[in-house]
Length: 328
Image (cartoon, rainbow, N blue to C red; front, side, top):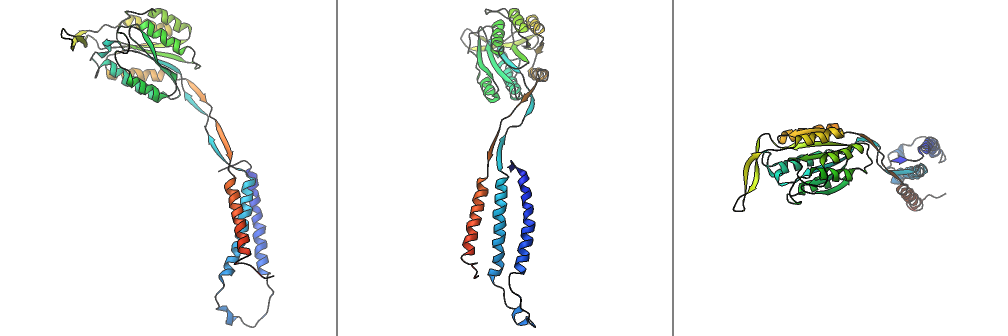
């Protein structure tokens, strides 16, 4: 319980002289009579009213105590505390071209990337995060938000074939820049994950990188794919999908240039564990202190004490004029 004026609690010291006065009064209430012995009446049982008579005084003290607490203004408070968190603006740009179904990751690149991205988002408390998906075109899947559960759920719901097939790295980066540029955080970063080379789109990757640099946006690029060959999905002559080992081709030069231009870093993910380690490193790199000021709501909570005081006062009157009534 919080008190707006706790100094009023010092009034409880008044109980000391009140109790002393009560004791003195009880001792001098009745006239004295000297007798030779009280043996005949010493064994007589005392009336229950004699014990109950002290209850009135205790209840009177209770009324005074409730009034003192009311004067101190008891309050309830719903308080958000001020805390310092590490937050930033981040956009995840995820390649969803068909080649992401290659099975050099478990179960494939696409699902592995979604799983690691979801875990990354879940651990970024206080961050403002958005998601962009791209193939032959780019699309803002989730605008900037701090609701990590919404982001994680949508990432899990991303499906292959949502966009026309192809790899427009420049368009994906440009859409990400457009989404993050108005963010209020001091640190802005884009994590771009792809497994191929730019083969379509309206914006050249290096042009988008220059725009990001001018806006102070760092880009972390991740090339996903094992070294050598990997089983890629191919449609056979019967229209069925089968997996064929093909060379892994990632335009590492372009991805590295994008990262270097913007002050970010290029990573090569050759397996599930390596991809997890990369996101863990980015998580360590992208930390910015932010102060969160939380709202405090305070309400007076004196009503229970007022009700208790009225109830005790009513009970005192009831007892005084009924079972504890005295004849003057």
